[in-house]
Image (cartoon, rainbow, N blue to C red; front, side):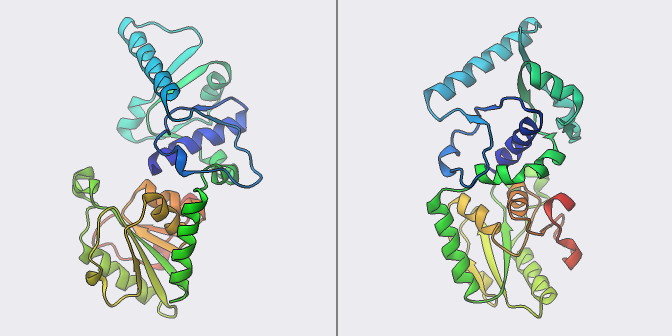
Length: 277
């Protein structure tokens, strides 16, 4: 979910900046979790979940396969691939005149991950936040947890424990045990010794609350979208590098610390806002 929130947001911002139409077909399983609020209109179109969305994606995939097989260009359609950028993790700037020109004149179907436009992303963040606001039931769940946590202390520290897919991802580099997270929680407590820290722990697996005794914590099994926007309601966040933590950080400009290694020491300078990291 967070991967797609990031990916789509760069295109939403870019389309706003350069006034071209944007049709989003790759968000069906998450579409019903959000509802736009506030005065900002994003000016993009989502294909609703169901048969039309599946049919459109199937048609696009077949056209792409045909174009590759016979090595031809289809009139008015460009299947735009950045495979080399993805391999090297070098960002492709869709703010470039080259990309903007084709986006304004033809149907562009992007293929790749590292499409980026940080300049316009930041500029149009209010519209993006409006578009990707959780539905009221999830906002209510977040508020209940935040109110409960703030009744115990004054500084909310979001802890993102990411394990399931991180066991194998990146050779397990960011797969940390509870002992590592507990050690970092102690460092953060010392860092904010003059504050009363409440640790809001969000995880993709069930946690044993008894392992986190000695801290004031909020631990529960929650829907991923509640965890995501609960982290966004904290004063600070730490966890392994991920788009999940990144989205929570940028959504409410919450300073985040990304744990690149288990022995990384957390200092006040470790916490940075999304656009400064």
